[in-house]
Length: 91
Length: 91
Image (cartoon, rainbow over all chains, first blue to last red; front, side, top):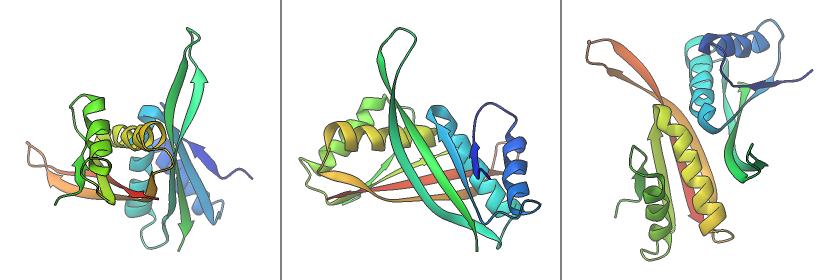
Protein backbone atom coordinates (compact mmCIF):
# COMPACT_ATOMS: atom_id res chain seq x y z
CA UNK A 1 0.00 0.00 0.00
CA UNK A 2 1.37 3.40 -0.98
CA UNK A 3 1.70 5.71 1.99
CA UNK A 4 2.67 8.89 0.10
CA UNK A 5 0.40 11.89 -0.38
CA UNK A 6 1.52 14.31 -3.08
CA UNK A 7 0.41 17.93 -2.54
CA UNK A 8 -0.85 19.87 -5.58
CA UNK A 9 -3.73 22.12 -6.62
CA UNK A 10 -6.72 20.28 -5.09
CA UNK A 11 -8.68 22.00 -2.29
CA UNK A 12 -6.64 22.15 0.90
CA UNK A 13 -8.99 20.04 3.03
CA UNK A 14 -8.86 17.16 0.52
CA UNK A 15 -5.23 16.61 1.52
CA UNK A 16 -5.89 16.96 5.24
CA UNK A 17 -8.76 14.46 4.96
CA UNK A 18 -6.54 12.06 3.02
CA UNK A 19 -3.88 12.21 5.73
CA UNK A 20 -6.35 11.80 8.59
CA UNK A 21 -8.09 8.87 6.83
CA UNK A 22 -4.77 7.07 6.32
CA UNK A 23 -4.23 7.03 10.09
CA UNK A 24 -7.84 6.44 11.13
CA UNK A 25 -9.77 4.21 8.69
CA UNK A 26 -6.72 2.72 6.92
CA UNK A 27 -4.75 2.29 10.11
CA UNK A 28 -1.38 3.32 8.66
CA UNK A 29 1.53 3.77 11.06
CA UNK A 30 3.37 6.23 8.87
CA UNK A 31 2.65 8.46 5.88
CA UNK A 32 4.86 10.76 3.81
CA UNK A 33 3.59 14.15 2.59
CA UNK A 34 5.51 15.16 -0.55
CA UNK A 35 5.60 18.43 -2.50
CA UNK A 36 7.68 20.40 -4.98
CA UNK A 37 8.26 24.13 -5.59
CA UNK A 38 5.54 26.50 -4.42
CA UNK A 39 3.47 23.61 -3.02
CA UNK A 40 6.04 23.12 -0.25
CA UNK A 41 4.33 25.77 1.94
CA UNK A 42 1.05 23.91 1.46
CA UNK A 43 2.62 20.58 2.43
CA UNK A 44 3.73 22.14 5.72
CA UNK A 45 0.20 23.50 6.26
CA UNK A 46 -1.28 20.03 5.61
CA UNK A 47 1.15 18.44 8.09
CA UNK A 48 0.47 21.08 10.75
CA UNK A 49 -3.33 21.06 10.46
CA UNK A 50 -3.52 17.23 10.27
CA UNK A 51 -1.33 16.62 13.29
CA UNK A 52 -2.40 19.55 15.51
CA UNK A 53 -6.09 19.99 14.75
CA UNK A 54 -7.17 16.44 13.86
CA UNK A 55 -4.66 13.91 15.17
CA UNK A 56 -3.30 15.77 18.17
CA UNK A 57 -1.44 13.46 20.61
CA UNK A 58 -1.89 10.52 18.18
CA UNK A 59 0.40 11.45 15.28
CA UNK A 60 3.42 13.74 15.00
CA UNK A 61 6.14 14.84 12.60
CA UNK A 62 8.88 12.22 12.63
CA UNK A 63 11.22 13.48 9.91
CA UNK A 64 11.55 16.26 7.34
CA UNK A 65 13.82 16.06 4.30
CA UNK A 66 14.46 18.72 1.67
CA UNK A 67 16.19 18.19 -1.64
CA UNK A 68 16.46 19.50 -5.21
CA UNK A 69 15.35 17.97 -8.51
CA UNK A 70 16.63 18.96 -11.91
CA UNK A 71 14.46 18.74 -15.01
CA UNK A 72 14.17 20.21 -18.51
CA UNK A 73 11.42 22.81 -18.94
CA UNK A 74 9.36 23.33 -22.13
CA UNK A 75 12.10 25.47 -23.70
CA UNK A 76 14.68 22.74 -23.11
CA UNK A 77 16.37 24.63 -20.30
CA UNK A 78 17.69 22.81 -17.20
CA UNK A 79 15.65 23.92 -14.17
CA UNK A 80 16.11 23.24 -10.45
CA UNK A 81 13.13 22.75 -8.15
CA UNK A 82 13.12 22.20 -4.37
CA UNK A 83 11.28 19.24 -2.85
CA UNK A 84 10.11 18.33 0.65
CA UNK A 85 9.15 15.04 2.29
CA UNK A 86 7.42 15.25 5.67
CA UNK A 87 7.05 11.91 7.46
CA UNK A 88 4.18 11.68 9.95
CA UNK A 89 4.07 8.75 12.36
CA UNK A 90 1.81 7.41 15.07
CA UNK A 91 3.13 8.34 18.54
CA UNK B 1 25.63 37.70 17.08
CA UNK B 2 22.27 36.80 15.62
CA UNK B 3 22.49 33.83 13.30
CA UNK B 4 18.89 33.86 12.00
CA UNK B 5 17.87 34.89 8.49
CA UNK B 6 14.18 35.64 8.08
CA UNK B 7 12.82 35.05 4.56
CA UNK B 8 10.39 37.63 3.12
CA UNK B 9 9.79 39.63 -0.04
CA UNK B 10 13.34 40.79 -0.87
CA UNK B 11 14.98 39.51 -4.09
CA UNK B 12 15.82 35.80 -3.80
CA UNK B 13 19.58 36.18 -4.23
CA UNK B 14 19.76 38.67 -1.34
CA UNK B 15 18.92 35.81 1.02
CA UNK B 16 21.31 33.37 -0.62
CA UNK B 17 24.10 35.95 -0.43
CA UNK B 18 23.29 36.62 3.25
CA UNK B 19 23.53 32.89 4.04
CA UNK B 20 26.76 32.40 2.09
CA UNK B 21 28.35 35.49 3.68
CA UNK B 22 27.51 34.26 7.20
CA UNK B 23 29.57 31.13 6.56
CA UNK B 24 32.37 32.72 4.53
CA UNK B 25 33.21 36.27 5.64
CA UNK B 26 31.53 36.08 9.10
CA UNK B 27 32.79 32.59 9.78
CA UNK B 28 29.56 31.33 11.45
CA UNK B 29 29.31 27.64 12.25
CA UNK B 30 25.54 27.53 12.11
CA UNK B 31 22.71 29.66 10.78
CA UNK B 32 18.92 29.30 10.96
CA UNK B 33 16.72 30.17 7.98
CA UNK B 34 13.22 31.10 9.21
CA UNK B 35 9.96 31.69 7.33
CA UNK B 36 6.20 31.78 7.78
CA UNK B 37 3.25 30.96 5.49
CA UNK B 38 3.83 31.21 1.75
CA UNK B 39 7.50 32.14 2.29
CA UNK B 40 8.24 28.59 3.49
CA UNK B 41 8.78 27.38 -0.11
CA UNK B 42 11.25 30.22 -0.58
CA UNK B 43 13.12 29.32 2.61
CA UNK B 44 13.62 25.80 1.26
CA UNK B 45 14.86 27.26 -2.07
CA UNK B 46 17.34 29.49 -0.19
CA UNK B 47 18.63 26.51 1.82
CA UNK B 48 18.96 24.31 -1.27
CA UNK B 49 20.68 26.88 -3.49
CA UNK B 50 23.02 28.07 -0.70
CA UNK B 51 24.15 24.59 0.30
CA UNK B 52 24.22 22.90 -3.12
CA UNK B 53 25.33 25.65 -5.50
CA UNK B 54 27.53 27.84 -3.27
CA UNK B 55 28.64 25.93 -0.17
CA UNK B 56 28.65 22.38 -1.54
CA UNK B 57 30.64 19.96 0.67
CA UNK B 58 31.21 22.77 3.26
CA UNK B 59 27.71 23.30 4.70
CA UNK B 60 24.62 21.09 4.92
CA UNK B 61 21.13 20.93 6.39
CA UNK B 62 21.41 19.86 10.02
CA UNK B 63 17.83 20.14 11.21
CA UNK B 64 14.37 21.19 10.01
CA UNK B 65 11.51 22.11 12.33
CA UNK B 66 7.95 23.02 11.42
CA UNK B 67 5.39 24.56 13.75
CA UNK B 68 2.27 26.75 13.86
CA UNK B 69 1.76 30.26 15.20
CA UNK B 70 -1.58 31.80 16.13
CA UNK B 71 -2.21 35.51 15.80
CA UNK B 72 -5.11 37.95 15.42
CA UNK B 73 -5.62 39.34 11.93
CA UNK B 74 -6.86 42.86 11.10
CA UNK B 75 -10.50 41.82 11.57
CA UNK B 76 -9.72 40.45 15.05
CA UNK B 77 -10.03 36.84 13.94
CA UNK B 78 -7.68 34.16 15.29
CA UNK B 79 -5.52 32.87 12.42
CA UNK B 80 -3.05 29.97 12.23
CA UNK B 81 0.11 30.20 10.17
CA UNK B 82 2.77 27.54 9.59
CA UNK B 83 6.44 28.24 10.28
CA UNK B 84 9.72 26.58 9.32
CA UNK B 85 13.23 26.74 10.77
CA UNK B 86 16.01 25.23 8.68
CA UNK B 87 19.35 24.93 10.47
CA UNK B 88 22.44 24.89 8.23
CA UNK B 89 25.77 23.87 9.74
CA UNK B 90 29.37 23.60 8.66
CA UNK B 91 30.26 19.96 7.88
